[in-house]
Image (cartoon, rainbow, N blue to C red; front, side, top):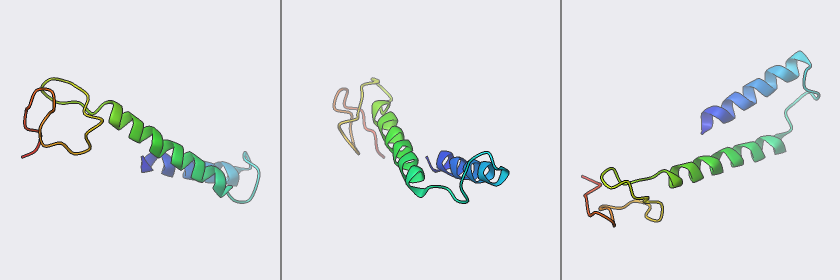
Length: 77
């Protein structure tokens, strides 16, 4: 998730240098909001697609399970 935030900062800096975006510096409030939204989107995506490799049931409600609650396969060595 840090790569998109880094690209956002670099592109905003370049666009401000070229005069496309107004202002001498990036408004830091917008950067914080963009970073928070990207991290939240990554968390939601990860939890929504976290599945057991055997039965493909969603594991989002278990943060670090040893076994799948549906099929019982061992998830950790």
